[in-house]
Length: 137
Image 1 (cartoon, rainbow, N blue to C red):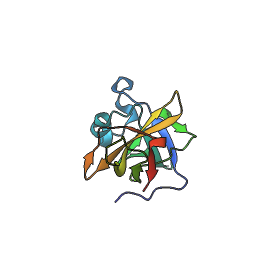
Image 2 (cartoon, rainbow, N blue to C red):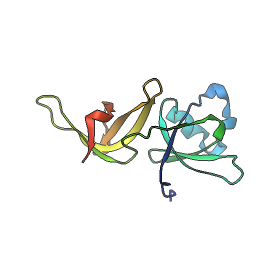
Image 3 (cartoon, rainbow, N blue to C red):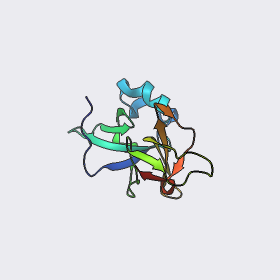
């Protein structure tokens, strides 16, 4: 059972690629973390062990143990986070308003902004939304 989310949430980037080597990722999480392709994705920091050796970070419904050296905290909290129920503010003319749950949060370091992908009826929508294009429903 996943641990409860700490409040306030700490968000950050984990810019790991296989070129860094696997010592940064706990052996139990290596394959899943590599498949996630973490670069540019915004994680929630859940906690760390008492020795400060491992961080627990969360992406959507997955949790990973990683070394803290590569975690870069983001100080501008995103407007939405994983599992938030959202809907499109202004759909294109003649289109239905999109709605669903936030499943992916991407971070643009250059602009300090997040974008979001949502799941609707267990299907990930191909479109990526800006914060201004969504509201809680």
